[in-house]
Length: 180
Image 1 (tube, rainbow, N blue to C red):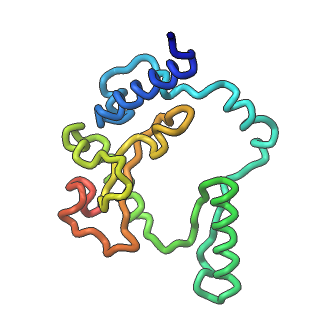
Image 2 (tube, rainbow, N blue to C red; image 1 turned 30 degrees about the vertical axis):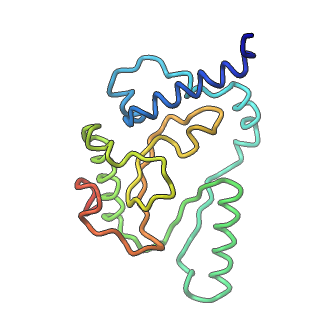
Image 3 (cartoon, one colour; image 1 turned 30 degrees about the horizontal axis):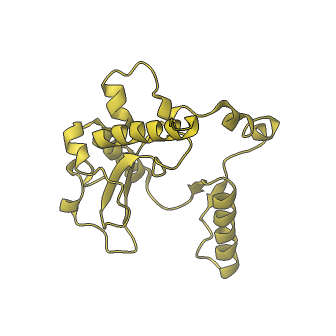
């Protein structure tokens, strides 16, 4: 007896996802290898964009959260918390201004991440993980919901957890990002 097409598609897709993930090279690995066609696991169904587009998107802007008054009074603090909650629930992201982090620090962080992604895949692989229960200072992988989303996202992710635990020691960080 032959498996129904949906089960066959699912198992084939799972094999493709697993094969890609097993390379631990990420999307950049595909690009570096000279991929000429985006693999099917990254292709979103056309209707996914139809219901998320249209005239309503023309009116939306990225929420901007101003932290300037955060510590001035309890009312301002609560208002900022409410704006963060609303932006997170509605958009999933927002821009923060007046946070007090010097532009030079932000630029060096971007350079550090760029240096991380430009290094040899063999070096990056030591940070590649999907185990979110492990205490790992740096995590590198392709989108966190890789195996559960209808289509993978064309991106690689690189994250560092600085809290609630004590910050990592410099030797725990990738050398190219250590002082960023």
